[in-house]
Length: 154
Image (cartoon, rainbow, N blue to C red; front, side):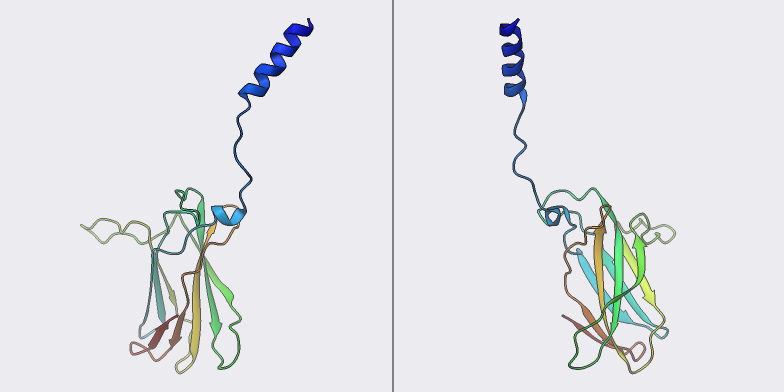
C-alpha cells in the first residue's frame, strides 16, 4: 500500500509543471494605441485612433474592453487634471461606408463640448476587461478655433 501511495505522489510531482513566476498586471495591460490623430472641426474636436493588438509585454491582446477618453482644460503652469468624458466600448468602431470595407479596429469620438479660444489636453487610454489601463502613447493639446484649431501632439 505504501508503495502505491509513494508511486502516486511521485507521479503527481512529476506531472506538475512549473508555470513560471507570477507576472504583474501591467504585463497584461494593452499596449499603446496603434495610431492617434486629432483634428478640429467647425463643431468640435475629433479624436481618431486604432486599437492596439498586443499587450504591454508583446503578447496577443485578447481582452480589450474599450477606451477611456479623457480631457483636461489646459491652464499654463498647472498639471493637467484629466476627467473621463466617455468610455468607448471595443465592440464598437467605425462603420464602413457603402461599398467600402470596415476600417479594422478604427475608432472615433467627437468632443462638441469645447469653447472657442480655450485649450484642452486629451488622452485615449486602452483598458482591458480586468480594468487594467494600458500604455498612454502621449497626449494631444488642442487650442480650439474650429477647423483651424492648433494641435500639439506631446
